[in-house]
Image (cartoon, rainbow, N blue to C red):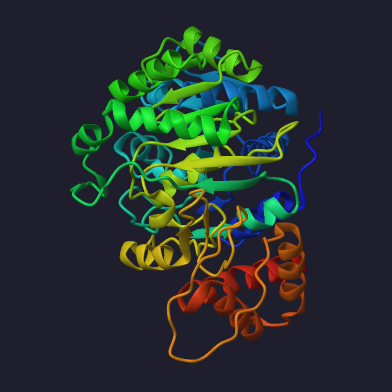
Length: 460
């Protein structure tokens, strides 16, 4: 079967080929969560294998082995699997590799001409480095939605170039991702938490979040905002995740807990029941934040505080995949993530240099506000929440006349925004528009992203 790629996927592949043609040996293809990186990989490796190229596709979770195997089989990619519990086919031109298994079997397989690394922000770890060092002459292509390490540092020591895909906002506008609503009834105060290895200290997070009152309040908000919808919960620890599932069950809401130690067959059973709707809530810890494709997720409940922009975007991105009957995703943020990181479609200027944490925090905090009536998170420029609440502006010295405030029509606002964007002819005009929309710091970032995307589409 031939995979029908979207225009931005074709552009990413074309730019990667051109970069390698002129001598780039390692590069990153960045594209948002849910934009189809697995399909892109299958098409890319199908074409490479047809030319006699041997390739390894590195993944780090059992679910990703299964997901990739299904996609490659559908695309007609002849492949083997190097992972626990699978038979080997050393002569297959493409190998789907569990990193944990491959590192123990390196000497048993022919060296590849190309390595493609899924979630390549992890490729700085010792296990990944050992594999890459084993084949120093191979081309290395990294795939990720968030090309930044947990500690905010970039990937410039491991990759020479980054090629940017579409923005989340663009994909929502084109229907390739679901629209969303964010509610932020914050239940946990993270002000006193210490930072270790780039994120909040895990033991302190667990002590803060493992309180029955917090989980009970989270269940109340689920009932009010997303009752009956299939929701994924991101918990702070295994103990916490089990508590969450148990309390949902006590409220007669079908729920289950999964983690990395859950037996494979049990995990598959739970996720099958979740897709079918007999289980409504799945609580997990560090399992479904990356890579796993479950379009049936209708809501994401954040109960794990994190300073990691990448982790936050991966988590909310789980709910943005479109599926039949889903009009929009619901994000329920109990840990202040949206205040810290911004809305899910906030523009980001991805580079190989990483994230300036302090600038990121300052920009996001002033860019989002929370409705005190319904807890909806909206951009700072919004005057009236969709629930009808009017945000009272701070007192100003200059006299002004209040106009009539009306409920925000999201679709009309988006049409107007697209028209304004289309009328901005160059980078200067885009920058002026961006500053008006997002402020002095975020505005120029947004303008550069849009301008780069335009040039790429025109082939310049």
